[in-house]
Image (tube, rainbow, N blue to C red; front, side):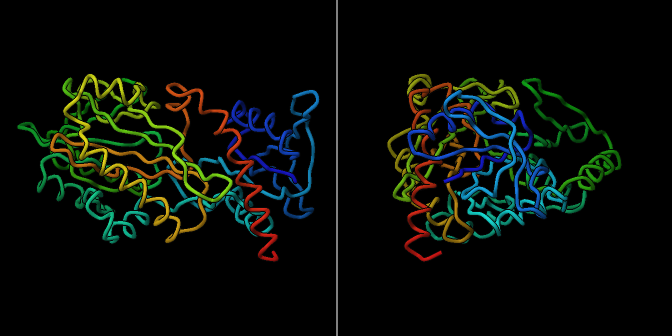
Length: 356
């Protein structure tokens, strides 16, 4: 059985892919890695590197289309058609992807917000297409967050706040907070329209999701499928951002903290009732999400908790990062490396029984 590991570039996910490839030997599986650009639809091959299990190194190779594909490609803030996307779509018809991913945040929100067991956990979210849309929501709420529909890692998120001088726009980049004051609506209008001309955006009310030090925080939970097609929690951790910051993403300068350490510092935030809500979300969300959309292999669920004990589903990511789990619970990484191989074996057995 040949497992294909697909990433955006040759260097992206290299360490992770190498650890998976080392583990594959015990499963009697072969592993190759490649980028979408190197899918050759005409001859039905992929050009990339094949892992030599004896030498434990990658060797340049052209291989047949892998039996199973673990897709770890990230496509940025846009979803415009491209040659790479066309090749990925072709590959989906000629191989089996462990997970087929989720559509944009707006599509996910529209469907799951209607679910009776989940609707209470989603903050009000609207799609905005003009600067007037955003300014209208700001006038109504005084403080709003705008985020890209296809964003990840906290990129492109802005906080807009009304003040005596007009509107203050804030963002966090690599741990530094940037602010810009707009004193006239025409200035703000022009800046917003420039943003909307480039990417699709969503708007939400600003929620006070901060600890006692006024640092934004969220709870990241990593889930993966096991060899029985069951969802398993691999780990969880708190991400805290800079004081008075906007996001807690590690990519924008946030820090990781174990849940136990966070509870000791902030015992009033995560009560028994809050943990019960979290468990309800974990029992319900993965199966319901997969039931509505396509097959999934892993999920990163980001939860916000406000000072009233309400739990909010802030993001659902079908290609989650592992930084926080690796930093806080390194002992789980062995299971994480084995998971794509175990799930590939499950799919192989399942598809064989189904006669595919």
